[in-house]
Length: 416
Image 1 (cartoon, helix red, strand yellow):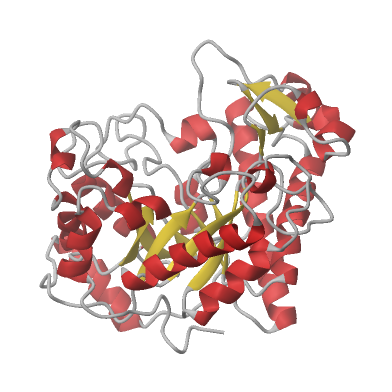
Image 2 (tube, one colour):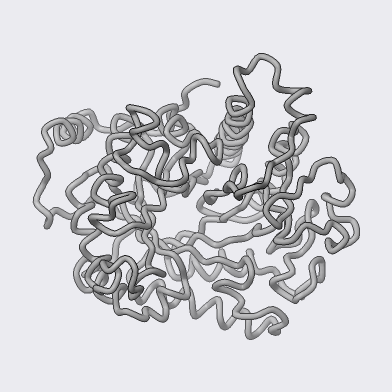
């Protein structure tokens, strides 16, 4: 799988960035970026953000969705990452997968309108970018295939599915699964003018103590030539990401449009104690080893347009310090054409543990710190309902301290 490049960076800018990373120097905190992504994740799984509950009528669902977009504008954000495929289902009339149960309370039931079409139009009317957020492999938040709607792909192909940790997953080790989930996601890209395709942090599932992801048969069939099962699993996820990038790139060229591709991984690729190239962290999960997602490679090979590591720890955190992970990711993207945005844990603001989250200024300090690194092109907040309710006032503080005027996610020359 070859390295891909998509944009040309100014040599002077890259040289300056490299110098900053080498010397440890930083530009003044007041220096504003030429462009800045300011985003929020709008989650639909389990009705986390929207709709507030299943079985609302179309008019009420639309009112709630408009309200989220209006809140984004009021907070001077410019991008919404809208979860359109939460559990092997769809928030548009997909020929591949059933309607999401979170719309009507019943999987496969037509809600009587097209949420993705509506969302794209409403977002663009407000000059917001709309990135379609997909979860590639999660099938259900339970382990009973019989609860899936009749005709569900997981019921038609039971050999595609594995139970693990109380959930059902498509098996990433099967090439036919990889092709299917890519086709299911690309259907939305072909039919709607979305600005981006966005994967979250779930690839192979997060480890569950005492449980085993049983892909013995697939490893026996497809794993020859790999040093071990872990290397084979990483190759499966590498292929998902690389092939999706290639298909999007080819589709962009045919359609004459720009659909960007990004991932928001758990922020620790590997701890330095495991790998000298890793971060000085002591995280209990490492994406490379536990989720089989080689996020650093995807950046260094140029398979992504952007990456949004979920740096969900405060400044000074012992297991994983915000002040360690932001510069680590800045070094990782340096010299590539992959944009770096930092995922922010707005939902933790106001928590009592760790104590740093009690201070509503903690999140604002994150942006002040990140401004030292020119590779950081913006921030994304989890999640939309927290942007709206802002229980600790942390979002209002960010807006007051850092978002004095509107910004574009991309410069005029970058936009389609």
